[in-house]
Image 1: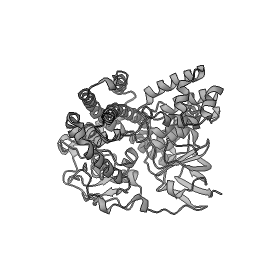
Image 2: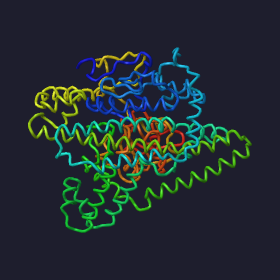
Image 3: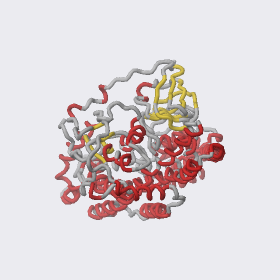
Image 4: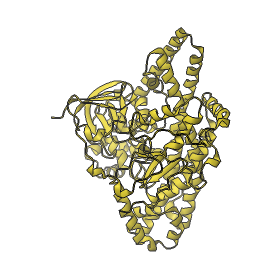
Length: 581
């Protein structure tokens, strides 16, 4: 294997530190060349730079105009630029670098210390930063965001028959998504960077009144969270299956060939189900595991992923309804809000009371963050469908060896490929083989001082060992969603194959994204290898009322499948109560 991958960045000298923290949840696997060079380098990364400047924390001239130093790609893996992120602690008067580092890393030993650069401090930005924070704390509505939602949904509704387009027309349609990617991530940076303000203030309030669980509980039950929306629709589909002997029989016959059996059935329940299922795929078909990656399968491209989850959801009792869970969390949040107001009144701290009220408004950005992400994912998906068609037709024509090989193209090669696709066949096949080798490597968690180790020095994942936890062992992580739950652990590494997860089991996962969301309805609690305070697993767990602990390093390797575990979402602990027999 060569020591650098073909799409690797040159690390920034201005902001030389990078991290997989939070990045590993967004893009857990090596990114395909086309995804990086087209979707990210020509779209998303420029939106991130624009959005960072809109917050008032950065200035456009600080960034490279071709590849702004917001993110990084090394060995095919996606990284956040840690040194760049730290400017939010340097320049924001109400946040420190130490607080940012703690939120990202806890006490991770490999984090490089902050060293001031002459261009870090920018006092002239302070007024703009504070104005932006004031905007966050008063934004009860965001009309522009709803207009963005309408736009991306219209693009999906107006998608033409891609098989009828010429190659040139396909490229034109793919490139038409780039402005939406730029603007979409501009908005997402705004919402995402703003979503941590409310939990931070709630943390101060919690310390003042002696209850450190306040931040978790006050950002639960917010409602209208896009990451949880598919679960509500899937629940209704699951109830239709559970309430129909026809549908139950079709599902009981097994997942193999299930979609064909459903679509070929002349029974009214099956036909009604298929109509509702297809409507679901139009609305949520862009979601799926690893959905930021344009080569990844989604619910539209592989409906079997959804049917596999429905096969689990249909087994749940009606009293496990996510609607009921969400209503309960909302009621708890409202009661807690009243309780905190009363305690703050007793303390008599008017400044803190004012901050608390402003934080209740700022908590809307937890919802906005999920909505901006949904908009981008829908846009990414439109590009995905174009390139899938390009790969399909040129494989059928014998020009390339596999439809997937189209994702080995670089963005700059697209026009040449369309002009002479067969000439790329060997190159793409070779790249595909090399790209797949990257998945065997364990990327460094931290890249410091612009020093990227050669790929030949990266450890292989199959060479890393982990000792299984024993009875009574306590694993620590980040407290994500409150509550304590004891149940059987089921290690699930693929949301498309959740067959072992029964209602009430503790789901142990490597990382999660909206493609995993329906499984949270089946689980009694969740434990995840990675994640931060605004990670997907935490947000969904809070909405559905599940105890959740994230950032439990190596959980999927050290928690024995079938063990009975206690998940303490209040304190971030997972205890092995009993080993499997």
